[in-house]
Length: 407
Image (tube, rainbow, N blue to C red):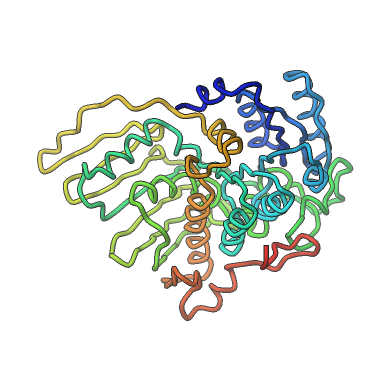
């Protein structure tokens, strides 16, 4: 039974009241998608940027007739017993602590990718979701798209044989962010709440908003920004957990600016059985679109950005004829359905899956920062004989914004 059918079969279900934490571009996109889901009511909007939170509240009032709570401090929403679930669209360095605090307060969580800022945080998110029995869904929405679901199903059914290699390309086409001077914190911004778990540092306009992606204290580069979407499809199709060898190289090419992360990066993730996934992130202009490739013992599959795909079997190089794909599922409705039923097994992006896909991005970035080939123990989730790399599994937190060892 579909989500819509189940919802209509219920008798006057209680609304699911949500709080949205982080009202930037992605937070506002989530707001507009979730208000379309039957039975959802926006109870709160949160952002340390006072201008953003008021603009979001005005939109909610104008489009739903509901006046949401507005606050700079997410903890006010966790204390609100009328809020059932939160949507987390903060900068990356806040993702894990926001989710854990929410779960400890009895809230379910829709968590944007990358769901953690480091490997340790991903482990803690899974532990908290199990301990507090919360529904937690990752923002890897392609798992709900019919074309991707169909392509993955055909690979799982053996259409191209045993898959030994997956590859993907992401063309970022990013411009220089230049250099911004240190200046006083603007009056509309609560700088302490924006910094959160990160260490104290002076304010400059290349951090707030968006360009924080390219600074290690707050973001994870392009690999952590768009990489989770791409690695999630590769890992899903190849049915992989964590890799045991990682290599990465690249740099910040084409210009000099204030950013720290690479704008061009290649990564190889190798598994114990010799199979591998290879990624290319191209930060300068390239005409090649985003895509995935899978190579198997019987043939190969090329998947386009929108999920369309071509299959080549055997020596004849004849593409497989196009087939109809199942319809897209509502990724946001899928989360709300799980909130209502308390059944995580029907989630398309249950948090463990998104944590694993995010971990690949952290592993690739650690390999880039440390250099050389890294060997990773997938059971202990520690690097073998490389303490510099192990030092990047977690981070130094700023009190009181500490991701706890014991959730």
